[in-house]
Length: 292
Length: 336
Image (cartoon, rainbow over all chains, first blue to last red; front, side, top):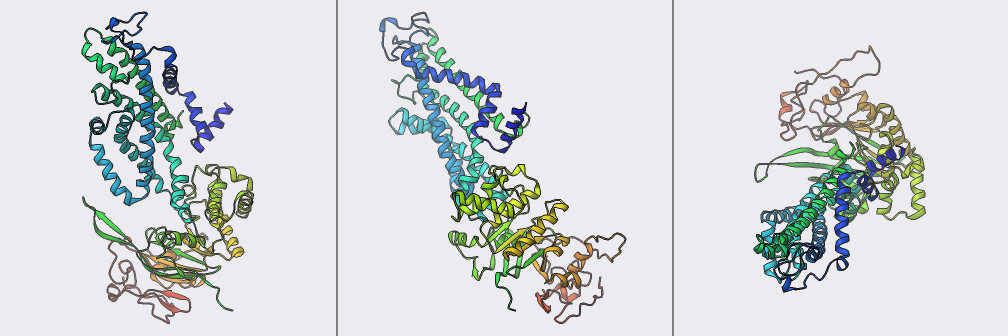
């Protein structure tokens, strides 16, 4: 009991990594999501030891149903769906994390500048609004067709439509903080603008940004799979879940396992990330956090 | 004996806020928050700005600090006009003027420790670092009546009065010559108000600080002010020494303001002057004398002529047509 009250005062004081960890441990949603995510990360890391070559053709074993030899069956070229799905975990996690990082980093910078400088705001936010009017997947397809398809291009193409969402969120936080008298006090104390942004404004954006980053991550994984399914995403030789499902589409009626297993992995991954995101939102939102 | 040196000289300061309306947010008018205010503050002197809500007294404070850009007029700090300086030049001058805010809760960053809050101005100007900084902060804490070991605490662990002491320590950190105090005690309990006011008075004597003290509380103003300026609708209507203003108020508005303040002695009766109507909108101030719509002594002429702020008696400035230079301060005859 004593330790709980002590930590409550700490949580009220500031949101530090230790507090996030502390509250996360008491939140079942976060624990559930984290367990699944950790399992997926482990699978991605040890893929070479638990799976065979995802590209290995075995024309004699085409469209085999799931069995002891081929856990998830094989596709029309006789490739092991299990190995492809396991390696696909890597692609999905890389895409999700990279997009979350790129989009939050750029969105954060833009959002802070827009919230702080009215002139930047007038120009940049109109551009962001324009960007937001275009459906993310169409914008990504357009960007990918302009360049040679590669994982890097896919990451960039998915990041760009996410940036305005992050920027808007950060901007709104900055605008509320900007009006606080302690910002005026900092100006009066001779604090330079950049220092004000770093010292007084950025810390307030951390909590909503972490939550937003999880949603961006989940939606990026979905978008990548969607793009690959449409044949506009990751190059077909890379075993991403979307690519596996895309190839399985034609044989859906005779070999449903080709679509079924990567589909389950995709759904579970996105679910896990969203669970963590929801849990973090509940934890980091001070209004809800007080009640816990 | 020569007068102490001038610290702040404000001349014809104006701050008009544009009012936007409609789809294209066209400017449809201006709020004349501050409309031609002039005053001076010398070393070791407190000038109080009093007036009711919305008369522009806080705007004067913020504009003097250039936390808001003045529309017109000059603000001379130690003889240098700071209204035209760019950000970096202004930063150098900010060392000479600091501000204490009204709300001791929102003016301290809740994520920063008390020590970090007070050290911010010191590190900004590279005045102190390392152990020297810690020592300086400890001194400041003790000077404003806080324990030095409280510097590791966070703002929410302090009481309102202690927080305001923190605000004062922050303002004091860079040894300014002018402290602008924007209603520094109005958010505090009455018992704590006196402590904070006395701290301000002690600090003034010790460091010969000049104060621009904004308040709506006449008791507070009488306690701390050397000279007092009464504001009404963005203008100073009367400016006089403490004793003169409270002894012989000349402007009808000052008279009404003083009559409205509660007396500490029960049973004591006093003629109340109840002003008619509301304060007119600062978007559309009345013609002539701005007070004529509510003035019990208004003459027809008051509707037309805008009275200038004149020195009608030594050190006693008033802006009223019925109080010409050399007035004897006798009660006026009512016209309404």
